[in-house]
Image (tube, rainbow, N blue to C red):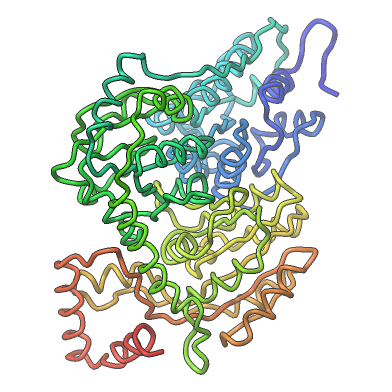
Length: 577
């Protein structure tokens, strides 16, 4: 029960009361001196405290929690170093438009400005890139600022930082009556804008749809739009979970980790319709096509490439309003061509995914495909950046119930495990599969203990190639010999066993299916240390001539440097079945 003397309430309690009313169900963090009153308040409140071992992991977990639930999540840290550790994970949340509030506790007010130990100017550090960042300077401001922070995070879908000096948290304040308001407006363009968009699409020739993460919740509208326009639907990696499933018009992702169906659909169209899509790499946009864009944030219109028409609106509501203005198209030739290309590419990409490579290093594609075959339809896949996310996105089919969480905008290492902890905290009854790179797992390996302490039975599969594999690939494409990418790993299965996990190491493809079955069946946290080939190539949908020259230069340098065995192993891994 929160402390209330009948006239006033402890500030820490008042803030927690308002944040719980705003939807906060869990708080991720590590206790510390300036956070003590907040921790005490959380203990008395309905909010669950999830005790992580590193604040960065706590922020990643909060970001994943918010991304999956759509509700406000929270992390809280002590002054100075404690809250500084949140920065990377909070940046992940901000880029992904996940509503997270961070309580950054601060030293007492009378010492601020005198270079007191652990004093940090949090406003200068967080204020430039979050949706809200303010300090609670008096007890009477606490309720209002807590509500403002929550509403900023919810309505602007981002990170709000509330800086709370420890002496303010310990004071009492009267309840004023401020509360968080929730509203669900339907936003779409005006009718005359819809008619303009329809006129271009009706005379659009070969029309392609490029769907982004803004299509979340608009699956049926996107499919009906594609049917009416006879348009292939390419999609970003972040949109895969929302538009790929039960979609006969889906042709795949584009970009470096995309496939030829999505890539060619975007480049060969006459008219490109961007739906909630902010894909950043300009070289993957067409040079001569007419481009239309619909986005909920008007600041995004034309940000990545010049467009002919732009409109602001929710994708679902906008497409519903647009459909009556569109003519039913009859020519499905472009769509059929792109679907055929998609199928042809899939057959090629899936070959190593079905090959156990007996007696040779395992294909990482085979690892992911084997896990995907046994995963629950509504599994959450929390995936590290780099090779792990490439193979997961290519080889885990969207079901309409499952979800892939990855650092696709911020591009940070080490988000996989921590995101899995947040996912399992939010959804204890859903299967949570962590695909961890060996480098990523090692960065925040201490939070493997969190899964044991907090009773979070995540399932971790380590893609163990003893290297920073994606970095090596980038270096080779630049014509370099791999530099500083070696990883001298422990036996992760033994590390996991020492912590309290069920664990197993798998070095041969023919053993993997049985190991996966046993791993997924464990009631508690479990880890598979899967040894895969180091020299697997991530093949893009089109070969950049510069990268091809770079690989040739790398090959020459490898031979001249006495590292020709790398070339031989690369050929065997990728081209010899």
